[in-house]
Image (cartoon, rainbow, N blue to C red):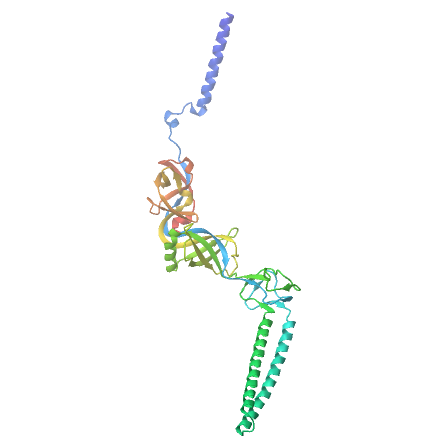
Length: 383
């Protein structure tokens, strides 16, 4: 009897446990629910969309470039002398013709005075020789003196004339040397710090310059491009549509200019050609030696663009989800290029289609979708 009671107790406990599990799985709301409600289909996927737009889109080329100056001048002395004055501040903007450095000129000024005294003596001697020449000319005409005296007088006058020319040349040379005691800016630009200060002796044999001036406006941006794009660049230059934008690290503003030249030879080792863009740089946004990204606009053409976030990649290639009648369909596309936050595509999209920009993770071909917003409402208006 005891064994039977234990067996009946175990069976009762198992029955109660099975009932509790059944109630938990069905839930209170499922007791009277019809079978059709439990077999409902998958819910719609919430997505964000945008409109594919046909518009004018630029064909651009990007390359890493360096800001270089059109002109750079190292200031050096042309005579050996001592610096007596520095007339610029380190890093200042100087204009062509500005006085920058003054050297000691006293020795040259003394030599010029000496040469002028020599010139005055030569002129006085020439006057005496010309008087003798006139006197001997009259005497020879009256046969009162030999011809040789007249010839000697002519020679002496010529000697003094030559001495005068030599003295004048000496003075001109010394005046040129005197001009070297004042160093002026040959170009307009930013000057470096002075490598030598007042009181230092400077010599023509010095290797380091007194200072360096770099032209800041305009400047070049030099970058290299593959030789295969040279025909497109030359065509852009011929059509006067060769705009260049310089993207500067850490700077929200951009500098703009035009292609100035293409190097006259392609590097045979790399197959790259050097291109230089002329940038006005009146605001000094570009600084010599800075690395920038040069964005070259080759041409502008009609194309279909979508937000870059709409383009997805699979093993079969690139595609976008096109939404129509509440259903998302896979549309293969060919990515041509990127322009900012947009991508230019080709194949299957002509403009005006609604494409998914967010919510791709749960999407499949033919899935039902519900639109929760547009990524860029202005694109719908064709902006």
